[in-house]
Each structure stands twice: as C-alpha cells, then as structure tokens.
Length: 339
Image (cartoon, rainbow, N blue to C red; front, top):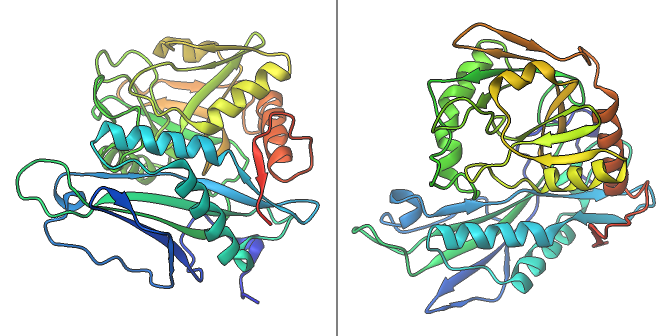
C-alpha cells in the first residue's frame, strides 16, 4: 500500500511505479513498453530541445462511488494531441496506441488512484517530443510518446472557492495565427513571466487579452475563461485559445441545465455585466472568480457571486464531477471504465 495523505494532495508531482513509452523510428511506432525510470535519455541535438517540437496533454482517471475507475474523454485528448502534432510537424500518435497507453498506465499505477470521497484523481500526462537530431531548423525523424501518472488534488490551493485574477496588457500568450489553438509547451513558456508576477502580487493567475487589439478576453492563464449572465454561458471564441475539453463539457452541461451557450468575442468592458465568472480546465475543473484586476488601469471587476461560488458555477461543477465520479448518469458517454 502506498503511504499518501489523500486529503492533503495538491496539484504536484508524486512518483508512481511506472510510465509507458513508444518510440517512432523509420516511419512506425514501436510496441508500448513500461518503464520504472523517471528519466528520458536523448540526443543533445533533439528537436524538442532546440526547436520546440513538443506537445502534451492532461486527463484524469477517477475512482468512483461504485469503486470502478473511470477515464474521462480520453478520445478528445487523443484528437487534440494529434492536432498539436500536425501543427508543429510531428509524427501523429494513432488512437489505438494512445488508448492502450492510457489504460495501461492507469492499471500499472492503480494503487495511486485516490479513494472516492477524497476529491483527488489520477492525473495522466501524455507527452510527445521530437528526439531525432537536427542542427538545421526542420522536423525530427524520430519521436518519443510517453504517459506518466501522478495522484493530484486541486490545481489552485483555494479548491472550489473563488480566486482573484489579474488582466495583463504587457504580455501576450499567443499570436493570432500562431500556436495558441494547440497544446504545445511554447504557449506555456510565453505565459510564465506574467503568471509568476501575478502570483507574487497576490493573484491566482493572469488573464490574457487578444494579442492583436488587447481589447478582448483571451485565456485565463492556464485555463479557459467563461462567464454567465442573463441565463447564458459565454466563453471566448478565438483561434489563439486552446479548445479546452472541460469547457466543451461545461457547454454541453450548461445547455442541459437550461442555459443558452455563446462562443463569441468578450470585450474587456463586458466584464462589468457578468453575474458569475470562472476558469476551467482538466487541472482546475472549475475555479470560480471573485474579481479581476486590470493591472494597467487599476480597475477592479467584481462579480456579484463574491467570495462564494455562484449558483451556476456550483451546479456545473457538481454535474461534471458527479459524472466523473460515477455519482450521476453519464448520459453523454464521456467516461470509460478501466478497472
């Protein structure tokens, strides 16, 4: 038995027993293999190190109320990884290999899946990197696909409680026709400085504006932004925003709960009109937002829900987690039982 205080889990790395790996060489992927090493050996001229050929995903396995272990929407993570690979000229991971890797890494690390009722989950991190040696700027001819697993708690220390965020004008997360729509490491590297400054100044994350005009809401740091007013769930629509699988799920649930759903531009000044706001993603699930400060102007946008999660954020969170933990009917077919 593993010695973990499940109730005290944060969103961080905890060593587990195994990860799984496949290697792309000579135009084909190798059979999946398991490894107990936390290290990766590669050529010093690997393209992931020099030219950013790297993409990753994040998904979770949940131990349910019935004791069964469910993986949430793995097919959508596979599709998104494939899109990311195509965007930066990497070998595409086939769906059957992706599924085998997801299910195998969950089975191999079953002891690390947090018990039902602790609020934890087993976080899976698929990683695809260029390992072929290149000095000139061109795609690699060899790749490594791996998935490791680690038990996690809430992404933000506040858990499902409102957080404060900060709008930044002096940094951009992604260019309008760049890689903002795919999950590659460069997007996160571009967000680090603004994010660390926000933390230092007492905020949970940065909110980025569109990089072309700096007049519209883009991403909420490491997550998608959404807001609610007049019975409508509203989330930004832009080519530079990562299509969050959690946001996709929340839009479906919002519609099911009787809310209208809009994907559209959100002008900065519209923040004054929202009843509730939140950030959503695999790691955070939903983090309600109590207020957003515009760092440049000093203006503070406060939401009526205040220091408590609003009714719609609460219902959406309960619905999504209820499906993931097997408490509610999975009528959308989002979960697949592994164990």
